[in-house]
Image (cartoon, rainbow, N blue to C red; front, side, top):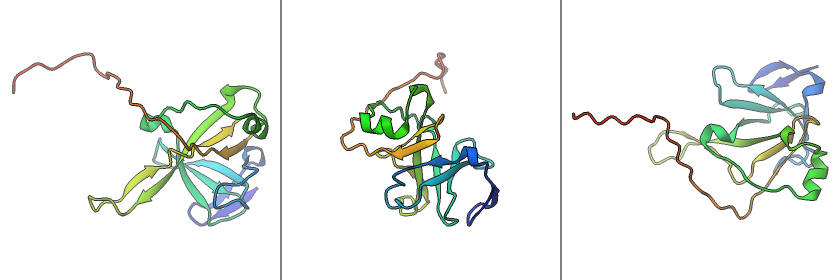
Length: 152
């Protein structure tokens, strides 16, 4: 099937790859069918394009690209909504948005880390989970086991 996107142009969509958000997304509750496209030239950013609204496209990314690791429990209702059989089928994405009001005067990209998208990749069903009380922690990972001790 062919769809039109104001941002991405004419797109071919395999109906078997459409992701359904039964509740829509907050602010866009009437938009329930989306398809995921990779942004050309970027290994990080994907486009989540509404199949039914050519003007509705979200930038999304895997949280691991930003060293964000989620640890939350799905409610029974959320598991039923996702028709989840296996937790290995879960895909977590964060919505990205451009912030033009940065202190540096340059636009920055920010992620909505308190409201990740949770998608069952097997059933292609998703929802946006609102995390009300989160505790942030930092994990430091050594990338290089050698230390440069030379003098300048």
